[in-house]
Image (cartoon, rainbow, N blue to C red; front, side):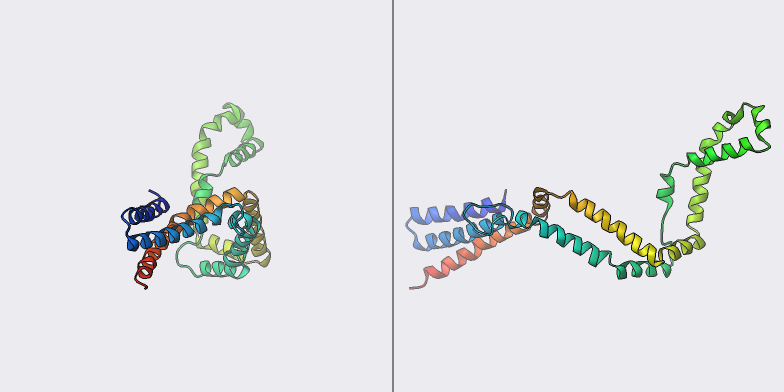
Length: 235
């Protein structure tokens, strides 16, 4: 069950018990616990929802624009700053293990154009006439899948060689390339942020912190009850 309902329900039961049995101590504990739990619950609720006549409520949806700007600044200045990108490339240069793994990219790349180019080369070569005697380029079509598989294996082996990695790192280390990478990241971040709506922002934050903010209600009720207990002993 929800922490809010449990805490407020328990506090309300203590209030009812204190009033019914005319127990001032119990009533004081219940009233302070209920007030602490209710006010903390209202504070949590006001973060996400606009409450009429309560200024400052619904602060997260209301600050939607500032929230997006904050995400943008965090990503671009903290994660993808020029210094961080340069440090990443420098670390890759001194890493003992392979820096980049192009195998997934190569595996998902359509290399059919490479096979088609090979067919054109053969057709236009001196073997073209001989190939026509055996059915033309269609005779080579059964070789398409084995050719593409072997080509992918060869490209993967090349991409994992030290010489190739050094070429990639050297290219990325160029100032214009670093700026190009950062510009592409910036474009992606801006596109994703443009898709955010106030309602979506509210749901994202609720999923992250509402569960933990529920403990504010619990501890509000606990501390309120303790204060109520102390107040009951004050003459």
